[in-house]
Image (cartoon, rainbow, N blue to C red; front, side, top):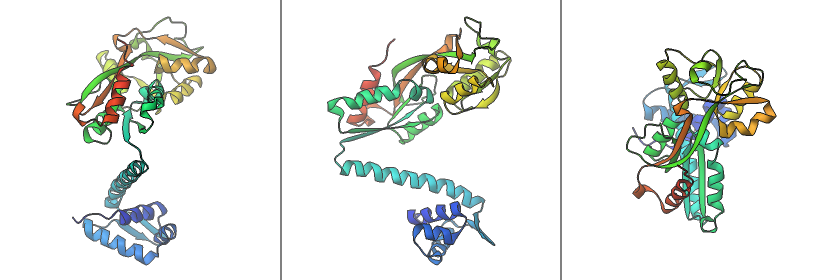
Length: 300
């Protein structure tokens, strides 16, 4: 296959999004016939039809839908390259990209990174952060999408190296009038009779909870799945479900939301976070400085 042209891919994405070659041409200030020619060349390059022509527009074929997903990823990567190189052209001396779990982002990571950047010696360093679930963090660091990852130490790191970071404490959060609200502490098994609001099923904590329930011969009832803890606590406030949330996050919301925090009497309720990276030699000087700063926050 010949090299794919980013301009053609950008036009292909626009055509798929608008469903119309003429409208895509208006968006890109290119005549429709020129776009049609590029799309025909693209189909010839990949060796299959990518679009189905309809009476009032076009829509991607199955192959076109697959290419659309790849094209968006490629264009996003190209945009990042342009932005990163632009930063160096403007005099930026260092740039670090971090992939972090929702827990780390919601708790202390943003404050720790802000403190790092406020140090005079780090004035020319830029840190970009992106929220991912633990398996994606490990994969992204391994594949070079980011130089540093922050996740729960239960994640399977493979050959990645790690250093300890912070820790948190999982607890149950329930509405003030919930049957469990009067309890001083809870075992996980005691929560399984109630509907839960949870994070995505492939997140490290949800995988751990599924395994814990399976060991008890039970299953968790997930009534609602959300992507962040604030949304989970809003669901709990509405009385729709209960949720397992880090105490460090829940304490910010419980008074305003009228919720009750109940400690979880399980050995895994205290979680430890780690900073992961490919190896020390692969870290840029800026990334090494950031890793050292984050690791200094560790308290046994």
